[in-house]
Each structure stands twice: as C-alpha cells, then as structure tokens.
Image: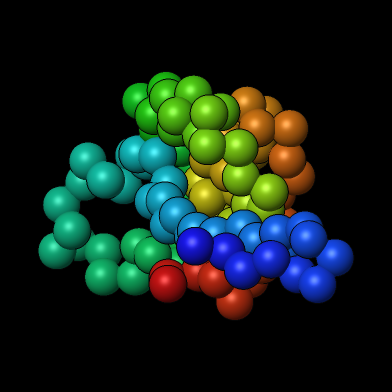
Length: 102
C-alpha cells in the first residue's frame, strides 16, 4: 500500500519498463542450407515476401503494446522489420550498428 505524502497525496509511481527482443522476418537465406554460409548473420540480406508478411503481423501485435522506442541493427532485414512495427505504433526506429547479432 502506498504511503501518503505530507500534503496528503499519493506519491507518483514509476512506470514499469519492458524490453522486447524481436527477430527479423524471414529472408531467402533462411531457406538455404546453413552449411554453405557460415557468416550469414553479417550479410545484408533483405526480407523475402514471407518476411514482409511476418513483419506486418508483428506490427499488428505491437500496435496494442505501444512501445516508446524501437532499436534496430543497420542491416536492411532488421530495419525493414522495425519500420513495419513502427508504422503501427507511431514510433521512430533508431538504427544502431552495434546491435547486430545480439
């Protein structure tokens, strides 16, 4: 139970902070044999058609969550996924190189 302040008001409560980690949508490399490419994580591969649909569905999910910040690596597949989420949330994406392969 909250304690009253000397003036009789209830202290303002701090909002809970939650971090969601989301993987990018599907790319053409997700369909290929992983033994042929050991550095796929660093290659800038775009989302395929299914990946764009997955990103759009994520946007629908996050529409109700209403994030205040969206961070992305600077790879096109992650930026495209983040931008799709942002379109549904009235939020901007901050792209950061150092967030690749978290």
